[in-house]
Length: 479
Image (cartoon, rainbow, N blue to C red; front, side):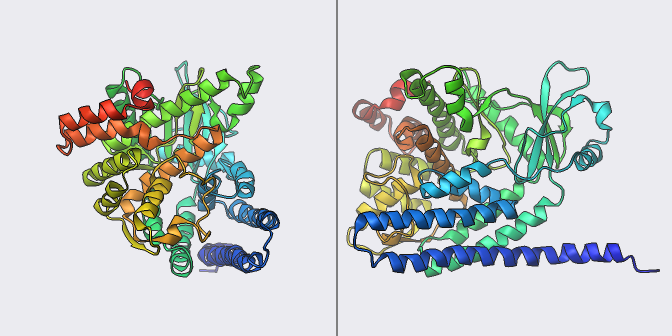
């Protein structure tokens, strides 16, 4: 049989692609990291504080361009990295300005490939199934893109989520590289168990390639929130029956404005963005999200674990819709109750209880400072509360004053990463909306109820706490 040169060339290209991608990642990541380490030595010679701050800003802008280029050029998993890093409280302002524009801007799969995936997965021609199908996607993210359409014989529009061909292998390669880089970072610089975090991330993202699992999660969370509230705090899209496969998901279309465009929408409606009406709308949005997440994490343990801005729509008034259930977490009961206990410790400013909470959750720490309990509590706030500790405006893990430098986290439970990431994303939203609040304080009554039902909190203790600690959440949020 004669050799098909094009076929051979394609196979070689596909086989070589992971190696090429790995080399590109390491070249770029090491360049960014060493750039900061060299700069840290140089800036230490500058004694003028204002000049040093200006130098840091220039360094952040220089690095931001490199991080943006890496995430934009490589795409795939690095678009998710951009979502995590592009948060106002976590990354330098220069990074946020650059990375926030990368949300939902992955390259789109061409229409002919979309059609092939749809017809192979649904076993029907597109024209047979849809009255109308908009081939230009509404949005394209790292794993899939979404199209607006209308099913035959229906009056309402639907959203069709279609997985990018070949994306799974690409993202798994990226995650393997990130795990190796995490080991290097935690040994060389930041004493935090990033490797366990990356392992859990790898497991969670692996689930995202199965849209049947996502549809089940959407149904489960939507049913739970509607059941325990008179009105669900957030809208959850309904799945269209018999229109779900591993790579295609058809669901209800929800009309709304992406939360990233909220400021423009407020101005368009003639509302003063700095006025009372805009402030009230932002508070209602945060109230709805906070209540929904408190109930999901602490009452159910099964929760949507990806509240980045691209997954949040603002509908009529300040009603909130929560999209994309690819990343969900079913928290083991012991961790759910352990986290409820830590929530109470943070809400009550109880340093001793916070230390106990860390041990109960299996977070293994080693003190590198004299005031261990105070720094451990500060670390608990940084990791598991939306309100930053006093005097902290931006988290700088490389800073010598960082809590992670003072209290090393040697072991971090993989199962807890989704809670950590969710709280960090909620904090980013609150900072973006200009509202500094504590989710731990707002979740106190839900945490109390969870511990009471588990027999870990007595009724008389709840009554005493309710009388002495009645806060904003109980007056405004409780339903």
